[in-house]
Length: 261
Image 1 (tube, rainbow, N blue to C red):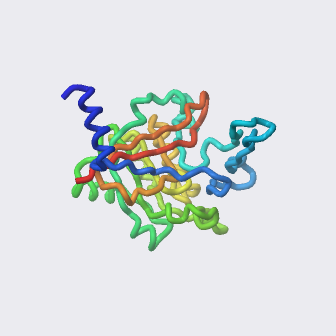
Image 2 (image 1 turned 30 degrees about the vertical axis):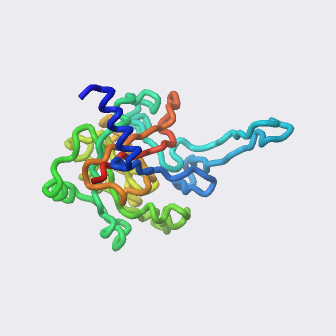
């Protein structure tokens, strides 16, 4: 099949609905939840719009805005340089475009996370999934479905924090190391505010998903939505972060292509 016929088949599938386009992105607004660090550290910016003109004397025929946002606000992409272990690796503008389109494995732990918000995925959980579904995709994404996107309408419910910090599901430290060093994937995607579990500040090392994965030149996708609409295997993810020069990450529009029978 020629390249043109492959692209024509893709367009035909999208038009007919045999290929479904699933939006995995949380829209950006001032109410989009943001991570909160202990007060001694710098804090990310809540998304803000500043109107420049709206069909008025500032611009009679056009409406537009300035916006202000943290790089890691809303659905966003973590580049390796985001963490000290990846300080000499790629910024978000340097990530090869070819790595922004990749197959996905979706591992569903929503039932476990509903019972225990501190649920941790272990290597054995992933190997059990592989026994049922086949190996993780080479050069693909490991997407962690926990049902946490249902909380994304409210800051407090989404962060789920108390005096001991946030309580959200994620990978154990050993599992994070395994995904970074042994799994064939290019990165980890989550529905929570970051790639690490809420209590990962107390892990060894602290924040192991950031430490291990970004140090291994892998990536993160966070605050994903609608993973429940994806099959365990077969989806293709398109991640489109803003190519911010020297940026540690960027808000992203993340889409998935899913073939429907």
